[in-house]
Amino acid sequence: MPLVMPIAFLGALLDSILSIIDKKIIKSKITFRNYVVYIFLSIVVFALPLVFFFWNVEPEAIELKNLVIFMAIVVISIFANFFVFYSLTREDLSEIEPIRLTTPLLIILLAFIFSFFFNSYENERNYSVIILSLIASITLVVAHTKRHHLYFNKYALSAVIGSFLVAFELVLSKPLLDYYNPITFYFLRSLCILIITWAVFQRKLTSVKEKTRFLILLLGIMAVFMRVILYYGYQTLGIVFTTTIFISSTVFIYIFAWIYLKEKITLRQIISSVIILICVIAAIVVGAR
Image 1: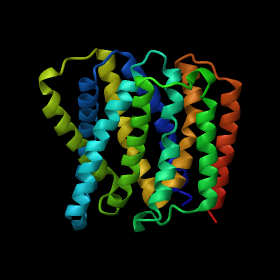
Image 2: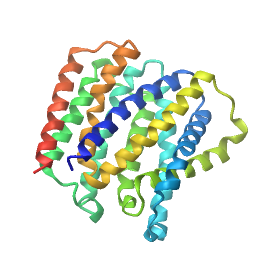
Image 3: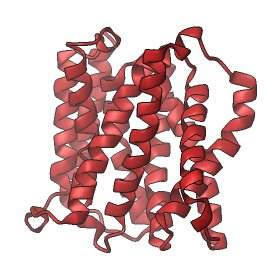
């Protein structure tokens, strides 16, 4: 477990960098069809040589129940990417950010609910860690919510749907990680998404700017490392514990946004960062007992 902790924090750092790159790609006015096909192409191309060395699929993975769950994850992920992408096309992203940041909260709540019905989630009921996770998640949302944000439009609705689908897909992935190693699972998931989206959008694909191509390649490489760490965390620490650590990525996002996007850090964000870090550290102490 001591070795898993720094790996999980590395995943949180990668997650924060991915958020910045993702925003830059979408701001380049890329279409959704180009976005989803080229990003998953980048992921598959980079993951392919890793899979050659680390391939591992247990026989139980091809049981009908597990194949149905796997395909559900693929379909949900495609729709999640669409709704998240559409929500981020709004010029004023500050109105969407509080909704998108509910994803960790939704992940924790879904994992907790599933723990009462499915054996795969039975270790997601550490009440002390759950309380600390909820405090950190709610603090994260409150830090980004202002009075003028409290209204709904089509972008906000897309953000809500996208956040729920992302959370649902991630929670649904945990049982299948018993039958794959993280890199194999992420590769197969991404390959299926690539095949489906390419089949649907192949005739409408267009070229993208050279700078955007570089960002897509960079995002694909970092996404592989981040997801592998995330899935490894789910396997070893559980969903709730891993999500709590990944919430600390917000602190990194503030720093990177300040340095690279020239965004101001508010007092509310500083206070929320302190609360989040306290909750993460407390969760680590409690979880280590």
